Length: 254
Image (cartoon, rainbow, N blue to C red; front, side, top):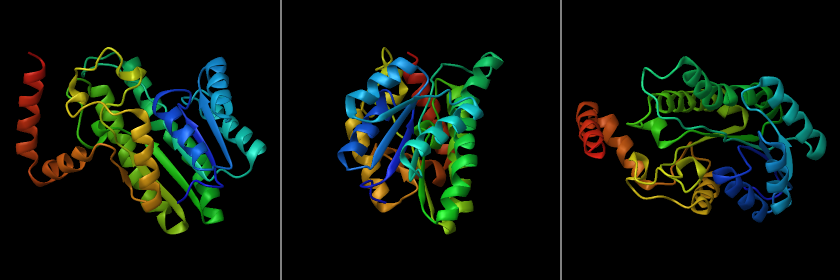
């Protein structure tokens, strides 16, 4: 799919990856770009910077997502591209408080589900549309420092796979974005941690990868090429991959 002439909505759009993608969509000639984020003033300011529409939205609230989508449709018409991009990161193992597990689940999984419930049937009825769900390299590999993040990002990939199977023959394209470290507020102060092992990508570079993958309509968006190779190793020899990840975890902990 080409972005030119399309209406796009991006959650988590007021900064980082979301803002970079929104800016690139504008440069590609989108008919309209809507950025949604939880803080009204920050969202409005970010939207004004690039000539987009800003709508405050709590992605953990299904009614809030529905209201945001309705507002975007009222302003610009049918949504052609929806990037479900909001995310959080917390270090947490199996002993993380239940509230932390629930927050990760709500942001990384249920937000995608709420958006798809609203949009996928409408896109299928029109025979066209594109859903891009942000996961992480942690969703196809793992994050050695955070179970809460890894588990819910895996679920995000699984849901995107299901959407691609259920709606792919009805004109709805689905991609899942799986980057390693990107220079955003999410990794501020953690630049030397596990996700940055292959370097830290600039958000604009990631936006380039999104545009290129959308043009091909591939399922995986892998801005870091190394991730594809790691996925192959994991699939071909899980025991060796797990042993390597244990060694990697031990190395970065010392």
